[in-house]
Length: 79
Image 1 (cartoon, rainbow, N blue to C red):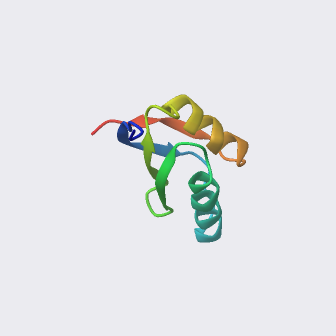
Image 2 (image 1 turned 90 degrees about the horizontal axis):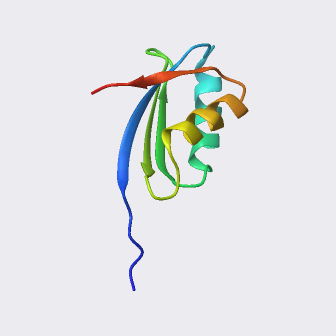
């Protein structure tokens, strides 16, 4: 039996990202978060792009993971 997946993408504004090294560290941390399929952090736009399985995690948990990594997460960006 195949496991069901609900693939989604979210963009979250990062309120205090300082440099490229921090962006890389946050990408790695998000990639290890349960339910995350992929993550990219753009330090130029202070935005995290996260692909995730909606059955295994939620936007609230993703924001909590960003906070646990030492950053402030803004609201998800529409579109």
